[in-house]
Image 1 (tube, rainbow, N blue to C red):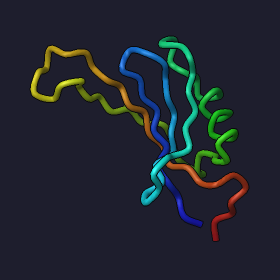
Image 2 (image 1 turned 120 degrees about the vertical axis):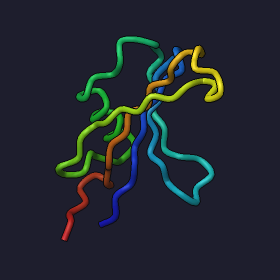
Image 3 (image 1 turned 45 degrees about the vertical axis):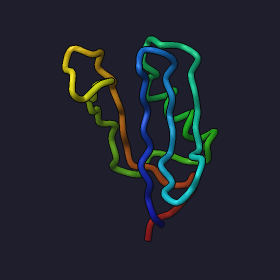
Length: 93
């Protein structure tokens, strides 16, 4: 079974979790209508389940920092979480 990448980000507004599905115009997305606190791992797991995915065995959440304007390091940071996911109930061979 193949795996995909899920990402979660916020630019200071609501948090958004999405599964990157290459070749698709729209990706499965879940949105929390709050800017803080950061959604917990349990909340992320529940949101992924709503989208039909689960964190792949052995995967963990990592964080990347970006900038709203990559050429200006004084702009607010954008935090992006990422993990490896698979479809719910998928069994790896």
